[in-house]
Image: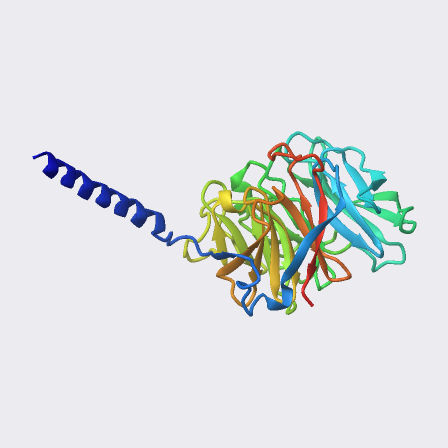
Length: 373
């Protein structure tokens, strides 16, 4: 009888282990990402022309909550969210102060966010997106001087009145291939604003360099380019002009979207893929724990996406939008922004001092890595 009990116990154990294995490997039908971690043998043809190689080099360290990175001639500028500072990266991991943005209010995720340089005018401008006590706004500053002596001049408000909150402020700005200025805005804690086309929140906005409404915008006399967004923080364009945006979801799905003018991306009615008429589904989605996507850059057919909670740099080939490749998983902590340098290197910002990470001694850092030629 004792042997029978032992045998039955062994059978039960085998069944239990088999059930665990079944549920562990059971695929999630809603997750549209087929993810691999990069190594020398796993980079497929879609990624070969934008393969990252070598060990990242530290370009700057000891930064507090850096948010955005931009190149201007031979200089590299980085914004510090909480202090409202624009700093220029020098040699030996050092930086110098270019200017302080006045009137910034920082509570949680708000503060000095995105920035971009426009050199199409005789006097170059540095555009910044930041939070005040009453709103989010875009302001441009005359940028003068050379490498090592850059400074900010006169300020001009381009756009104000974007509702702000402690979080969900969007904040990424970039000039598109059409020369227009694009800005991502969050719902600022009011999900209904994303579906209200009279609101500037929960949108991707498109404007001229002076902040005016372009004549070919999808809605007459409106800066709204797309709507139904929760908290988009990354925008980039492929070689053929296709626009992509990353977006923070709430509890279910973070998104990579292909942006088309005048289209509705679903928030707050839907989060992630819904297959519902009238809404555009993401081309790829991830759980917030494996993503929380922020800045994004495009190079040679590949979108590179900075991920915060996911602590990874993710690559998505535009020829295979259902797949992704991971670099540096867990090695550098939270990653906030990623850009391609004029020398075709990939630069990225860690974001472990923003109140949600686990900073190491040299955090936060600006780092660069080579792209295989």
